[in-house]
Image (cartoon, rainbow, N blue to C red; front, top):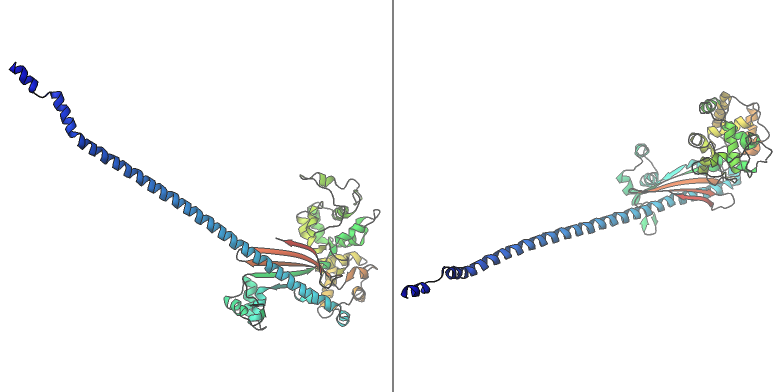
Length: 420
């Protein structure tokens, strides 16, 4: 019984082991808590890093967007400034053209043939020349002018001096502004008016009209003959296509017969002949045969404005050659045309024609025989002008093209206004 008692008194191995596990439980719980704290610290670090990355991306996006909006606003501001600088160039020329018209109404100047000369003495105006003129008090240095012609820019010294002039407009000095403008003027009545073909009667061939004869003369000559032959182009077709575009019928005017819209209907984007007057010079590109090279070769000598008379004081040599080819009998050769133009230029360098009749009399005195139409086809006055003015501020540029008619209005009537 005592052995059994001793055995019963001994602690059970299982219970002893259990007691040992229970005795070690606090240490195990402390280790678990440490691991959990370590896990929480890792999660917090990830959250912090993620938050920082998110905030960085957000701030970067906001900053980038703000920068884009700022640059857009600056560019729009510069575009507005450039536009109004372009308008300034147009308005300056409107003042010049107003003075030109008033001089033209002076009987003494008109009698001398100088009534339409002011605009021709100022073919362009720009802020660079104005700045140099003001900074030098009208005494331009040749080296400064040469540098400006080469670079198109004035020095910082000239710019600063011109901005400090004592002439004031409102609260700012004259030329004290950002940017520059460049404006130039051309006379529309210095070329051949193709809109006159609109009045052609149906039984008159285009080349038999006065305008058709002038166009034929414009495209004549050995050089033009070779140029047209290389491209298999007929000058009569070119003239006839112009007539078809503006006349009221739908028949081909060149004498070949047919429907004038066949070419236009065959285009990738079909259209019809206008059967009305041209509204812009670039509209010539829509006429059959007048695309690309043909337009580039002769469009500058054509106009759609004015009364149709050609101002011989501003017509270039190509237009003068067309006039002589059209109205002299017999038709002069290329060498004779060049000689006549040289005589006319030499005469106008020291004198002025007073009228179309005066021009005809001059040709007769030189031994040539102009027809009866020529005196009524030329003039010494321009009433319609194209002013092209470009304003530039930083990288922003605005070009304004305005056509202004002074025929019946001293202030001029705007016929066309385009902003590019």
